[in-house]
Length: 139
Length: 139
Length: 139
Image (cartoon, helix red, strand yellow):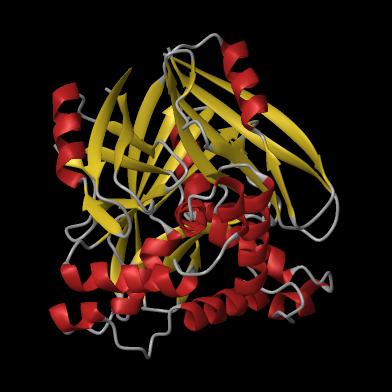
C-alpha cells in the first residue's frame, strides 16, 4: 500500500468555464505506477468545484444555463458587501457542487464510464491559477 | 493496511428510480474481513448518482418531485440535439448529485446513521445494467 | 501507511445552522502525527451535510437563503406524513448536500484554500448531538 500525492495546476479564464481534466488525471495515475486503489481529487479554493459529466458542447451549455438559472450571476448577494468582489454567486455554486471526488482505479486506469469525464468547474469571475490535488492510494 | 475492490451490478428500470444499496454494501464489506477504514462507493456512468437519505416511500416521492421541479424531464436540453436520446435531464441530475461517496466503517459495520441509507439514483430514461465500484481500504 | 479513526461531536441548535469545523479537523489531524495522505470526513445522520465555503456572515446568509428558496421549510412534504416530525425539508437539503468529503493533507496541514472552510450544515429542525467521523489515511 502506498500513498502518492501530486499537484496539478490549471490556468482558468473565469466563470463560466468547465475544464475536462480526465486526461491529466489519467497521466498522473500512470506516473504513480500503482495498479489498484482510489484517487482522491480535490480543488483548492472556495469558488470552484468538481463533478463528472459527459463533456460535449451541448451538455456544457445546459450545465452553464442550469447554474445561471439556479444561482444567477446578476443577482446581488450579501457576500458581495463583505469584499466588494461581486462573486457571491461563485461561492454559492462552489458550495453546492463540492470540492472533492473519489475515483477508483484498476484494470489499467480510472474506472470511469465511457462518457463520464472529470470536470473542473471554474465559478470565479476572474482568471485563476487553480490547484487540484491528486492523492493516489493503492498498490 | 489493505485495499480490496469489488464490483456490484444493479439492473435498473430507468428514471426516476432510487435503489437502497446499503445491504449490498454491508455484505461487500463483511466479505473483505476488514475491521476499520473507509469504503469508497462510485457509480460508473454519467446518468446516475449516489447519495444518502432515509429510504421511505414519502421521502422517495419528495426527492423525485424535487428533481422533477429543478431539472424537468419534459424540457428540451441542448444535449438532446447531440445524440437524440432525450436524456439531457438525466445528465444534469447526475452532475448535480455526484458519482462518489466515502463511508467510514468500524465497530462491526458501516458508520451510517440509523435512518441513513446509501441510495443509487438512476436518472437515465431507460433500463441500465449499472456498475457500482466498491473500494474498501483499511485494516 | 496507517489508518486512524476519530469521532467528533458537535451540539447543534437546529436548522438553519452552519458550523465551521475546520479547526476541529486540523486538531484531529495533528493528533494522528501523520504527514501526508487523505482525511475522510463523514456526518452521521440523514438531516445534515458537509461542504466547504468561505465562512463569513454574508455568505452564510446567502447560503441560508439559497436553501430556503430551493427547498422551503414552510412547504409540506410527503415525508412529514410518515413520521409527523415536519422535517421533510431537512432530509431533502441533506440528500442534496451529501454526507462526505475527502480532503488531502501534506506540508503540515489540510490542503484547503485560504478562504475555504469545512462546514457542517445542520438542517434538522431541532437540536442534535451530531457525530462527525474523521478517518485519516496516510503516512
